[in-house]
Image (cartoon, rainbow, N blue to C red; front, side):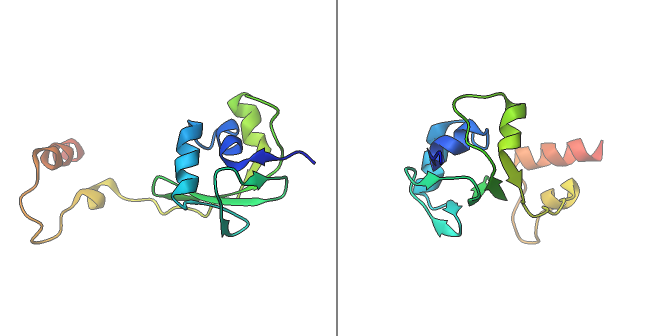
Length: 118
């Protein structure tokens, strides 16, 4: 049975853009294999459930195959089964609205509000 390091596998199947990003996520405790935190050198095999946070989004994938090397993105997407929960859609207007007492909006906040009003 073929095995890979978790940070290398995450990079090869295009779940992280760089291996260093996957390594940092593992070191920060953002990656779990079968429900347990793992180090970047932890081995992953077919059938393992990998859970991690990509930005503010939670992802859960099941390992289907091990790539021999760099593969195309279309091939990489077939090497895992995505079981991520549905993320709620945020309304852009409500995400920018400020809470009462939050102070004066910054110039950037005002520009974003102006873009939405147009």
